[in-house]
Each structure stands twice: as structure tokens, then as C-alpha cells.
Length: 247
Image 1 (tube, rainbow, N blue to C red):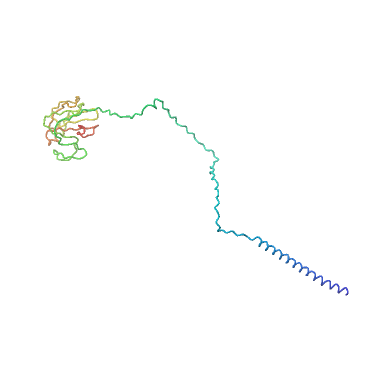
Image 2 (image 1 turned 45 degrees about the vertical axis):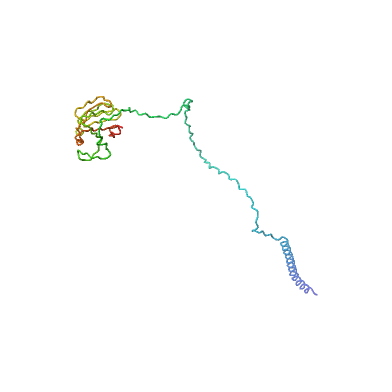
């Protein structure tokens, strides 16, 4: 074969050799990949994944809860000024004071006790009535009554109900001849409808039972009752029930 033929044969075989080598490499790569996959499958089969039964009952595990830590106080950067409080000094009791028995304070009334007597014996025909109106037969109307009326025979002696000083002896337009006695403890007594001649004068000192006058019928507002004594009592200027004073 001449040179020209040799060059053509070398060119053909040279091109064929490249493709043959490429094919061999591809086959080798496939063989290597096959064996690699085979080995991985074998390893997966030798080490199967163990599944855990979620429904399998297990003993409860005790878990220790962490101890609660106290909260840290918030600390202000600004200083807090606290005023100091001085304790009050308590005086200590002496042994004599401590041992002294506790006594209850008792208030004693300064009013002197009075001996009280009835000014006259007779029948009470009209009573004290300052809260409700009572009918006055003489005047024919309803009015309050600041005392009690005691019927007795004209000329019967009238006595001071308690000791005291005669304040006044007057002729009242409605109650007639009237004597007022101060008993020096806030109480005053009034004796009205007396006969004009009295046994005392203003300023006289009298005792319980001292005769001051006699029963008459000089009260124009109570003339319908006949001879009687109009007896009234007041405490610090306020009318009170004479029956309670006599009792």
C-alpha cells in the first residue's frame, strides 16, 4: 500500500479508536455504578430501620421541676429618702402606780336631797298636761295645763312642799293669789288660787311643811273648780309633772 493509503487507514482507525475508548469508559462507569447501588441496597437490608410503636405503654418518668427563683426587685438608680420615725416615749409606770387597783369613777350628784311633803290634802281634779290639750270648763276651750288642781275646803292650810326661799307673793290675773318658792337645786314650786292673806313674804326662808297660806278660789281661769289649790313645779324653768316631784 502506498503512503496515501496508509494515511487514510490511520485516519479511519484513529477516529474509530476515540469512540471505542469513549464507549469503554461509559461501560466501566455503568458497571461501577451498578456495584455501588448493589452495595447500598445490601447495607440497607442488613441494617433495617427499627420502627417505634407509639402506642407502647411505658412507665412514667418523674421529672423534677426546677425551683422557682424569687423575682429580683427592681432597683431604681435614684436614691430613696426615708424619713426616720422617732418612737414616742411611753412613760413607765412606777411600781406604786402599777400595783394600785383600778377604781371606777363615780359621779355624785351635787343636788341636795329634799324632804318633800304634799302641800294640801284633797282630791286631784285636774292633772299636768303639757303634751296634749285638756278642756277648761271655766273658759270653755282646750289648752295645756302646767300643774295639778287639788280640791279642798276653803281656808285649809297650804304648806311649802320643800325647804327653800320665797321668791314672790303676787296677784296673778288668771291664777289669783300666788306664792313661788325657790328650792335652790333648779326646782321651783308655785301655789296659786290662794286666799289673799298669805303667811309669808318674798325673801322668807321656809321649811318643808311650813304654812304659806290657805286654800281659796281666786283663780279666774279655774273658778269653775271652786275652792282648790293650783300646784305647779318647774325644773330649770321648764314645767314638770308635780305628781312625779311629790313622789
